[in-house]
Length: 386
Image 1: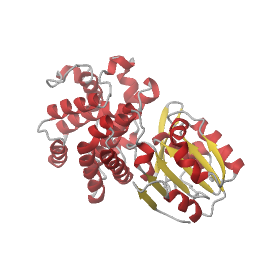
Image 2 (image 1 turned 120 degrees about the horizontal axis):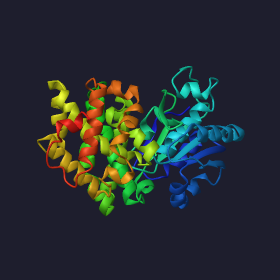
Image 3 (image 1 turned 90 degrees about the horizontal axis):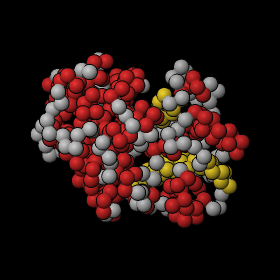
Image 4 (image 1 turned 135 degrees about the vertical axis):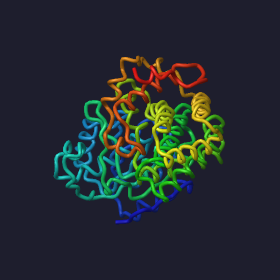
């Protein structure tokens, strides 16, 4: 089996050779319907000589029902190659289907972590990301929802065998999607950098990703400058490499309920939770973690947490991300719902131990920061403990 072929900003021509390398005749394609429609003329010539089965009838956030339908279609078709085309959800869907289709254990048990008796997929997977943000093409895990609860299916066998990440696949992203994707990559990189399991390799990828995003995000999202978008493709790939080593932390853990219950896209959801997570973490951290957070502030060109929050909100607005959390139907009564849906695994990755009271502080800070037109001063302590 051919492994670890990666083509970053080298065009789509490598797809032709990859398919030949895998000696493929029947290709199962998991694709985002909207993304593939806009890219059809670019991708279809490479697929035309082969027998292809497409699967695109799934929700934006991968759920077990859609995965089961995809597995049935996959097994009925019996492919010799799998290709995933789309954003993070489509790539996670492709990774999950290709991996789970060959398992002997219960799918539910594998997803929920009750069993780790994993079998290697029978066929290889090629990933073509159509957003510059999730880095899902580089990760050995995929997000799956069961009844609005988020699970992370993790195995070394899940990671795609080959990657084609190219500007031509992401150039036509709508501005809001580009903004969400950019903040997903930025948040992932920050969380990876401070994560408990960070090492020199993950820190390198995380810092390089942050630098690339801060230098290129605005022009890539707002002005669609080719040179900037190319660098965002690389930044996204680096963020995926970073979190594949460390996994994410509390900002991601708290964000999933906003997506499940209030339909806020993932990148936008994590953007809401990164600033309060950083603030409360700094307040209770030891000097080593404080130094890491100060390094993050330096990368943003600011000196204080408050200035970081102001800059973060300004960047969100520049990228068309609404900064009024209450406009999505949330109220302070939703604090307990948000906390109750936290993934304990991601909590264990956080650089400091967080109590339930700390989680309440983070959620309260989130409501405070994103209810004001401008963030001008620290929130009252009684708000953080309510």
